[in-house]
Image (cartoon, rainbow, N blue to C red; front, side, top):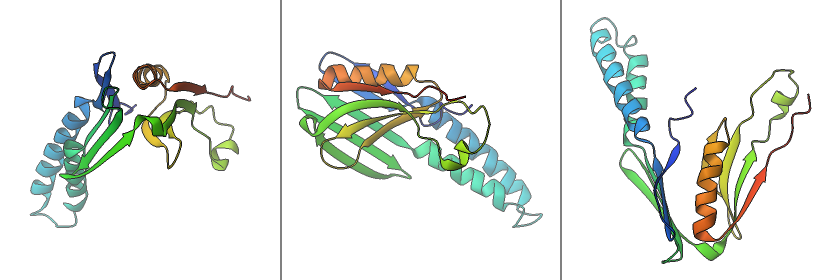
Length: 173
């Protein structure tokens, strides 16, 4: 239901460059949570400090979502992948040469042993990531439907000239 919060979207696409960034809905949801949590916390504060605690946490979660930034730029001309991430104003930047990347992978998320023991008709979750030759994979996004993930992965694979791997197992039930 809330898959759109924190999801990457293709903001710009050309033959030599793809820019992915968080959807604007993430920031709007954060601002909404901040306003609602702050109003409820301020009204509950005179009654009890403990009563204002939970709305205060909702407001902090709203600040987190409102300040969350993530941008991935695949630049074929420069030969690099730039990953910029920040939350609460503290950022992390990473530059990865394109030749360090092996493939763009979209796969069904492995189910935990706890989920496998149940006979629930759980819907599949798909994840997309960049597989690196050396080092950990670079997580792109997760969703219930793989169509948006495939579009994003195809755009990256076209620009970076990487192999696109799609791995999804059929349900065993």
